[in-house]
Length: 312
Image 1 (cartoon, rainbow, N blue to C red):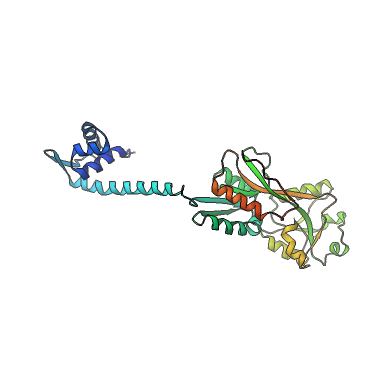
Image 2 (image 1 turned 30 degrees about the horizontal axis):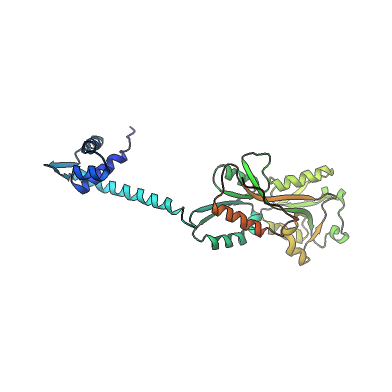
């Protein structure tokens, strides 16, 4: 059988009466009439089915049941006060929480410096990072599991707002010992026979690569799927296969001559990275600060710096 919760206003009257011992002073403290206080106490006693006060003239005292109830009521009001203070603290400078969704690539190459600077600005702000590819982070945004996400542009979805950070270019990556690297050219006819080391076949990026090659009449037939960019680069270095990666991800390896960048085709294949948020959600101070730090961190990463769009 479902029992209704005790009325908080009746509990307030009960608590105050227990402290004052007087209906008159309780009514004055709560800005109510004595009649209203009497009615609240009678209704509360009816709810708990026992007397809470013994009345001796104008003075009232708690019964044993009243003493038991008062201990529980004091705990309830203490919890409510703590809850109010906790919520109020969130409006203080630097307090609160920021939940970020980001791909493994962004987590590894973009976020470390951004998060370090963000914590210097807001040391008391709780940071939560949820790794995932663009479809996963967009789902997390829609379900209110994250506040912002570093993603590629959402595909035909009006629920989101996208603020571009930078564009990068995808290129074929091979070991220096690969015949294409030695010849400094790629034979398109041989692409279908090559093993491609990829991050995730279900990702936006892999679909972009497939569509790009399909236009040239090339189908990717052999893939090795790995969930780590570093592991992908390591396999390519030892000649297990080739990969298609952004040039900024392999800058160090190219400088060390452990990997070579080759053209994927006659056309350039570019992606746009940005910060995605729900369209109807206005970013707060911490979110705007995070976006600004991302913009600074991404300068020089891609092929072209994008202008910041209007936020209205």
